[in-house]
Amino acid sequence: MTDSPWIAKWIACVAQERARTEPPAHFPPLPAIPAGRYIDPEFFALECDAVWRRTWLYAGHVDQLPAPGSYFLWSYGSAPVVVLRGDDGEIRAFYNTCRHRGAPVVRAAEGRVGTTLVCGYHGWTYDRQGKLRAVTDRRDWAPFDFACYGLSPVRCEIFGTWIFVCEDAAVQPLADFLAPAARYFQHLPLDKLRLANRRGFDVACNAKVLIDNFLEAYHFRLLHAKTTDRIFDNLGTSIHLWQNGHSIMLSPNRRADWIDPGTIGMPEMRESTAIERHHNPSYCVFPNFIVPIAPTGMPSVTIWPRTVRTSSVEVLWFAPSWGDGPRPPLWDTRVANFDRIVDEDIQFAEPIQQSIESPGFRGVPLNYQERRIYHWHEEVDRRIGADRVPAALRVEPMLARFVE
Image 1 (cartoon, helix red, strand yellow):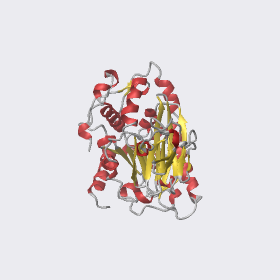
Image 2 (cartoon, helix red, strand yellow):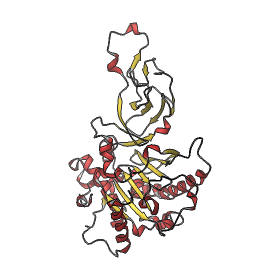
Image 3 (cartoon, rainbow, N blue to C red):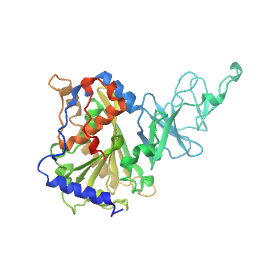
């Protein structure tokens, strides 16, 4: 893996970025992203349908489902979804909706059900594979086929230890969707990563305000002056754009021999290459899964739209196994450091939302460092269908020839 051509190519791209003194001559100026994409309710509805309901989305980690009957509720789609480990060990997803009168079949956010799931309203009973097994007062029901009344499934597939769901039954296989990005990190032991930490919170801004932030390193110097900017060189950041909206920004360490003192003594992924050891490779798995990778793990962020003006954030840590037992105390400092960086990232989010409601906000001009943002918005329009996006809110396709 260390001699893979793409590794040498990426390192050369970083050197080119550090050496340049102006935008590349072959790269076109990017039109401003229309302001209404961040505040228009009709555009938000189009996004929800075409992107958030029809794209594979990270839902959880297999550590959250340690045994048959373990489940958690995923509440970022059109309706709550219960993600459940069955008696056969398989992980499945279903709408949390009884097929009788629509009551939820589980009420708590996570837990473990017994041998069956029993609707608390009228007692319809399902097994842990989602099949209807019993109805209350069977004598009052005309004969019907139980097989037609199982819990309604939601597409659910696993990549490594990550659980993805999609509400579109016709969506392409998860592996095909992830392939443009995953080919560059599948050398890592993804099937052995543990969920080291998870926290969530709400932010009063459009989700794209936050997503845009995590797609560029242009803000490092001011927002992360005492954290990220001390370690990584934003002027050396190399960017690669891929099919399906995925991308990466690869920011080199300012010092080639630098080792984060907070990682000393922590387990590492032995398969890590020079990319993970001497750079910050921050992947965007479209639309909202931000995954920076280091030898000691992946401090990640997912961003979810709630309304046109509100969103939710999950901060996640995926790590090589530390062995049996709870997470060692050494992790506390690592988690706190990343939380601090995320807090720096979101400090302007709510003020930005208030500001973009102003007549003074007319659109988002982007520089060369920020081209991942434009790529992301192009993918949104591609999924919606350009003819369905109001003309005043479209982004002009500009980057197709730069997509690898």
